[in-house]
Figure 1 (cartoon, rainbow, N blue to C red):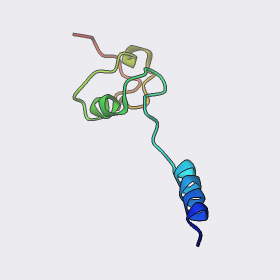
Figure 2: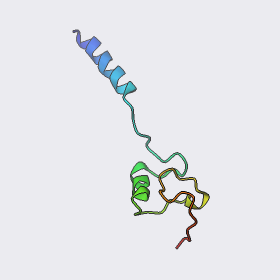
Figure 3: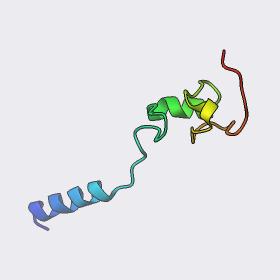
Length: 65
């Protein structure tokens, strides 16, 4: 295989590789912080609006500290 064809194939594979979104689509938290929300280590800024897809307590009312 020619080096240019191999490079093109690798570029195509890179562009089509499924990626996780870099941020939460609703509140804009980076992915790592959104995962901490999922593990109950951090509060989401939109939990009062029931808008965070990472918050496992969706739909529950909670008081902010």
